[in-house]
Amino acid sequence: MPPPGTAASPLAHAHMDDRRQELRALFAHLRQSRAPVRAVMGVSWLYNLEAYLRLFPPAYRASVAAPGFALHLNGSSTWGQVLDWRQAVKPGVRDAVRARLGHMRPGAPWRAFPLQALAASCAVGHFHAWLA
Image (cartoon, rainbow, N blue to C red):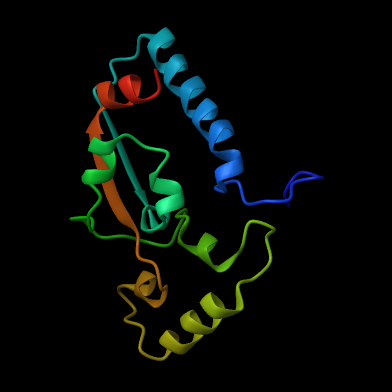
């Protein structure tokens, strides 16, 4: 559930500064830890959403593509697209998944979801510069 008093999605323009600040804190922690991080890589259905992509540097956004490896549903965020930011079921997405279940391939159940996971990556320096 969203925190009390929250009136808009965490990805709404009104919350972009908050999301960017969270990313700044994450990458500041990486710098301080002196971990040998060279690249940032991610896989998510959220890369289908412009509201999410605008959080990331241009090099990361430009790399978004279908992953070159098998996906799975265990521990993935794919199920998250069925819920809105208030944790309520989105009827349109629910219905789309249900309609595809009869044609679902057992080896690729993630294909039943309307938004497929995409992969992205870039050098960590792009994030440091973007968030400076």
